[in-house]
Length: 177
Length: 343
Image (cartoon, rainbow over all chains, first blue to last red; front, side, top):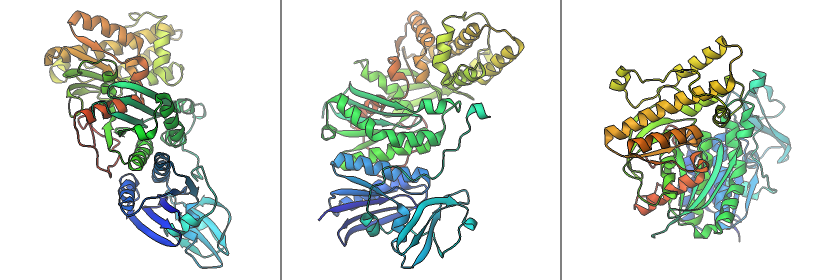
């Protein structure tokens, strides 16, 4: 069976796991919203001491940009170095997968008093993730500030190749000043 | 390992760069720049740069490997800029380098961007660099260094009190509507002007300054003087302003660099960083160093601006010197001092 290295840096945690079918060979996380840089290699080193890997699955967000990019950059380069496939999935979907309700909303911190969010019905995401003020998000029970379930992360289908940013860079062109 | 093959990654500002060296031989130097995306903002926008780094990283790695005719399996060590720089930008390179190093099971060297700029000379000259005085001038930094060992012992003699030299070029270019980045535009325009047309001030060169801070720079007074001149002179001659402004910067950089050589008794000068690509700085440096009996080393213009070859070069020197690699869990340091060569 394929041993999958799962990486997610879309939240204030750095999460790493190695999953083989329904077995968790390694699972670990380190807290720290600005510590993804040192945390990720430390966790992966620990994971690789337990098992080799044949594939990489990485959470593409949405999440605070700087930490998010550490996970994606690492995953892509690691896969290149090992000559194994890498696949991107929506991190919110890996959070939603652990909630057993008919209709609900998942939110994670987006800084600037906003949250990234998506709505799920019967376990399936309704529409694309978005970023809004929490007070503007209504219509279903909200699950805030949970972390991705890594076993669910590797089971998500598809391949998202771009980070889910949802915001443009802040910058004003000199001609518009 | 007499001739280590080192892959270097640089993402501290707006260039996504990968270089590969074997010992002191350059095998590949690939640069993907997002400079055009920043031009309309008049400066580098950190988030735009960081996004561009992530997009360009894998293609840039592929191109560098292709140019070097090597595969990743041939790499003995990975080097990466650990700082100083824009933290979001640095972390894309650091994440990538860590992924490569763990993927390949090879050591990683997180090195200082400024030291790397100086070390790139090792790809051009086969004789040892040290000891040398180094004038490091770029858009983000202007400092005078004494380098006793590029892999571990660098002393800061002085630095700018305000703007970096390259920053002054950018700002004056913006006032004169010459576009971004300003250095190449002013360099080009200055060729048609007179360097002695306008006597712009040389910062920190009074006799008192030579006593108290002989090797520090200041360019804010010069910037103000140029801005006032432009306001007061409606039909100013653009080329003369460019040439005279450039001359003021070149003059003061070299006055202090040569004074540092004389005071330390070190008759070697390396000029590095993006501003070292300036043609007037190169020409006047050649002239004055010859006269002063100082051996001058300036990298080729393509190796002066940010690149991955310089990071690989410093990594290679670290391997050869037997320096300990960086720990697996190191953090990028946006304000890493030049005296800290590696993390």
